[in-house]
Length: 475
Image (cartoon, rainbow, N blue to C red; front, top):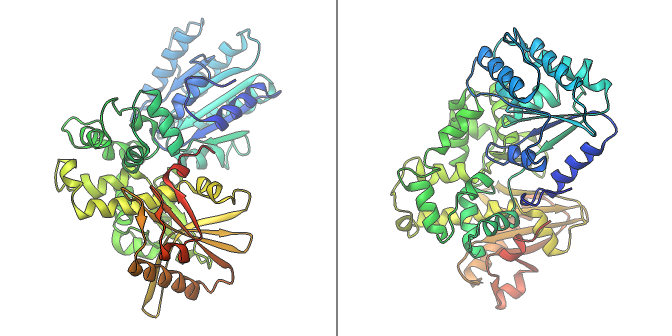
């Protein structure tokens, strides 16, 4: 059972099907970055047919949330209630009465969307949810309860890893990830947007694999025209998205914005001590929670160092839209994207953003290299020692005693390695070996848009190649 209207999402669909076929009641928690398509996935999979569906209201009071719940109960059930629910315990009892009277083959599917918004200050919502599951649903075999939220850290703390009444009650969890390049291409083609892969990669570097953003691409427009209309026009869909995004997710959104702005100032990421220095936030529980929330929500990624020391962990901004905002929208140099394309800052942005694309498509790179079956960890790497430093775009540390060092280049044509560039690459690999003290073999891979122009330097230096087309392979 797969929905023909859904792009990609094959593994989540298979998971949902298995939960439907389960011989016991199931409690599924779904989370992921805002705009990533969580609600769309669930609604499309179930073809908008639920035994009960409710979505929390943003910035609403407990009274308003309860009114919304009662209104949906009156609309979706044959039961009539002549007075509003006094609290959430009563509201869930009403839902239980409705479901008990419902005659149906198969699972009773309850979908509660935007769950974090429903837990207002001082309310008994979580207590009622816990009681509904523990006292009723778990004693049946025909309930599939799905809860969903964009506040990923809240979902993990309060539901999935709860230490209260929901402790160990969630039977399945599902993090919905952004689309890969392959899925982004499939979505664009389904919307009749005929763009070559170079232009699709350009769009991906601005908005990532976020279906909501990609769905706004209009047929017949080039990547440059799309970026201009969505980001730079006065009424562009994504012109004011940054503040809307963070305010919808985090109560103290200014702190989170401050941290991502600090991290965005360093292309290859920052250590915790550097974040403290740049952001002005003191080390402690607050910073730890902010970093954890940002990572769980998909805005940053932490990369442990080879020595596994926590102080050397790098935090890198991995959300493409956020990075684009700080580079071009926060303090715009111009409102004309075509004019910005000619600037050195644009070429620099393309270079390091393509590196992030490669970091997000390591399974595709491993497949192209024929090492998919080898267990490995990956990271962007930097190191300094005695005045010498090196930065590596992508490092794949393999269990077969090999480290694959990847150099990533976004170029309009085949790329030529000159003598000067070859010397720089040799020095980089030599410095890496010296600093890391690795005893593993080091293989050098070149990842580029259209491949390498073969010459003496590339033949001597490069052991394997990966091209942009390889990054579009479905996994």
